[in-house]
Image (cartoon, rainbow, N blue to C red; front, side):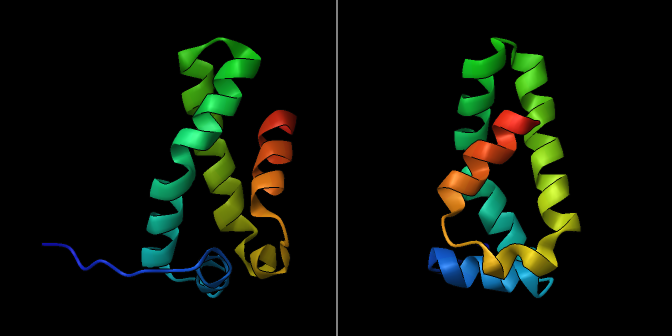
Length: 84
C-alpha cells in the first residue's frame, strides 16, 4: 500500500517548492480534476482540456520555487488555466 501523507494546502505548496516529488504527485491528484473542469468549460474539448492539465502542471513544476509565495491557490489555478 502506498504511503499516505496528509498535507495542508500551504504545506503542500511549500513541499513542492522545495522539490518534493511525492508532494507534487499529491498536488496533481488533488487538483487535476479541478483544472480539467475549468479548461473543459472554456474549451469544450476533452483533448484540449487534458493538454491544459499537463501544461499547467509542467509550468507548476518548472516554477516550483515561487509556489510557496502563492496566497490563494484556487485563484492561481483558475487564472493560470484561463490564460493557458
